[in-house]
Image 1 (cartoon, rainbow, N blue to C red):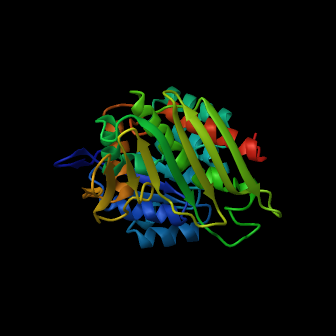
Image 2 (image 1 turned 30 degrees about the horizontal axis):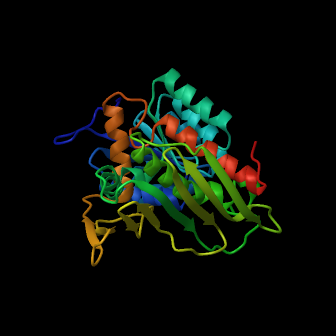
Image 3 (image 1 turned 90 degrees about the vertical axis):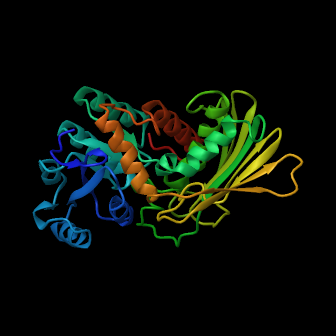
Length: 351
């Protein structure tokens, strides 16, 4: 770590710069206030005015409000960057940051093609910098508790997973969610969540950090104007005779939950992805075979959702690790491989 600052109780503090000034950048900035191992020090935008406004909102010194990516990456006060741009601009920003000697946490999906994944991971290895695709829910203690329940056999042997992440947005042909040139469509925007959750659980059941599907069959509906995938579903089969049903979309609101079925019961996760951005307790419901009523498993966080992600990343940096355990490079490559295959099967190809 290059930061000269230290936290008296938690070791070195990772100094963050944020690339972009959109909504998710603000969410990350807000949660960094609760981070134990990180501090926001800089921001970079394509417009100086936007960078200055963001800096003012999040107590960043005006000297570290940069009107270009190059200026941000030249800032010696920055140890790591959080890339929060639209999907198609991830690769350029990530490669530039790694070459500049910055550690990188990149919003999902990290890449639009497998070639981009390989280029970014190769650059991280070459420049010896930590790189992670930003699956924030993977870092939250609720997810750890669900993993523990599966591993301990609370519902017997895992057999089936149901998961969805779908919302309704007004159609805007120029908007990021709908424009294919901007990576629009449900599968890349939110489909990776139910997919990665199913891969995580199937991996746990097989004694591994994750599992890739042996079979994937996807269907979907393309928007009649933009051609983006507006609604999509897939069924998957994993090693160990585990199946999953997943769905996503941008034009219909669904019940965005995860249900996990085993041979001796099932688990209901009401808020699996956007778990809790504050310190509110969250609950998981365990239905044991033969039980009269479900058991409520309560998880009380001490940080916000993105603060856990930032701290997990910073801890890996402090250990000198290029990969973060919550989402390894192989895990990222496997998830994007499945996402792109799902896209291809519904008629969308980003190659």
